[in-house]
Image (cartoon, rainbow, N blue to C red; front, top):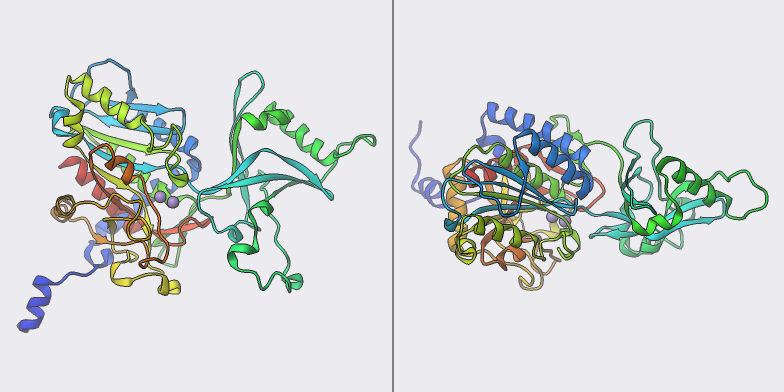
Length: 466
Ligand code: MN
Ligand code: MN
């Protein structure tokens, strides 16, 4: 082997750049990553809304020996509990050997995703069609939602306060729902419109049926036919929409992408792609040194407000309970705690290279991405992790051979976004965003790399175990 030149030595010892996980990981580790993604894809198919994610995660937790959290109970090292907040967010905790006075370790991911919610009074009939009107939830590019198969998911509280779950459009034998679009033959007036104005929010109305009930006398027979179906199948009346949370999500299952099957195609990677690795890392814990707390939260996509979102007190209240059970000063516990805000970042896409700054973007297959700050217009609306905490996280990942990269959300002033990190920071906890780079984020179907997903799991595992 020839000797390295002076320049090559300096480059090797001093310089930094993203490294490909595909080149660093062994064939065995790559196989583990592919195996891990199979479990993840099952999670994706079963957990398309926050309610479904809570249900499915709790079943897995119970299987792993977790018990329902009880107030005013003393817990000992190795105890595993889950706390369900209003069926829409979930906290899992494994009590550690050390007193929680030394701080707890938190992974916080969200389980809500952009979608089309039904309006409170959604059903109407127009020119031979019955439609449901929607109000979109989270940031979407509206033109992406017509002409794709949609499934209806959610929960209805009927007149007598019975809770009925709805999930239609996922089984091969189910019908799907559909938002129409204009044919290209007639788009001469629409062709000059921008992507943002082409499909207005009020036109995202899904087609529900076309056949009338058999009665000559009444009007809106197609609407009545839909009501009859809903009554027969779910025991619901039109007024019950008011006490329901129903939404359209893209129908169908997660799939592999590419000849090499290296990527995963699915609805809702943001943020199940962090929620699932955090969940798995938690369920695999035995008796950790520090108490580990995983929160799978709701409402992130609309600003974390509402009592199931992290800009409210439910996580703080839970942490107070953990502290008081050990007779520990909660403020001391919080000051010593740390958190990985487990959320996605944008993956560099060469098709839209002009929107990214490549040196500071997450690249595909380069591992879990650490995002020091998010925000927009000069880092507004972010927690901006400290150099000290970044140093700890970086050392942790290096010591545990996790493939990681640093990333920023697009070019300066190109746009921006936020995560739950700022709401965790508000509790006086060290926090940084750590997660998976996503292609076509917030599109009906997004894509991620299996190697990146696995390195994210390894990151959470290392965080909890060290
Ligand atoms: Mn997210
Ligand atoms: Mn998002």
